[in-house]
Length: 315
Image (cartoon, rainbow, N blue to C red; front, top):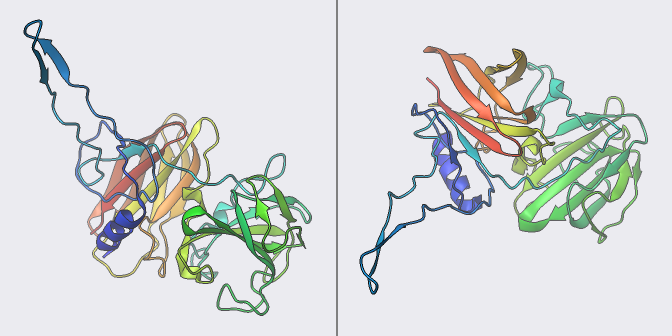
């Protein structure tokens, strides 16, 4: 069950965090936060002076952290770890036609990363501070079930057992052992390995085994949102042992702009959440999808530089 797996993952990775309580109150969810680092805020006790020598502290009610199990959504101060590996004026937008953990409606293999479509030779930058631990082709050292799938590949190890992978490169500009900073030039976009057309395939992996593709995380959960935007994570708490790609319709209410995404496909049950969107403009949104009971919908808010967590109980 995803809820059980989530609790274990939550306890392993999350640090103490008190998200902002939303106005909505309908019960339905499980948190999807992986590594937020905000400090809990407590209500300051009232002070009553009863005499010159006596000061009595009268505590107010204990603050209750926002919990997606009892709220329509929670907004958290989240520790977004990485910048995007492609920088403007080049295309730094993720190709949503082949999003993380999607299959293009069954036409392609499940995707363990995200794509940045750019011209051959476009500069690629380190997404965060770390050490280069791989800089070669994957013809011999495998990072998937196929040889030469990623082509020219760079892997950077970051703090707390996070890794970022940069694949299909036309040029590798760093060596194993190099210490890099976020924003350092490390390579160039290409189409080596199993690439179709020039683009950067980018992954985030977490854990002790960087070679295991089933340690991948959705990069959109870790990218720093642009100013004026935030991120959204959605968890579908289902009674099933496997994932199904539920079509999700996310509507921005101010102008009725619609985002069409699918929840994660089969094989990604290890992820605590089921969909993530980053760089959503701040404002109010409606999430809608159907399950066996009919229509599910939720009205939520996106705030600047923060993560909105939503969880549905699915029939």
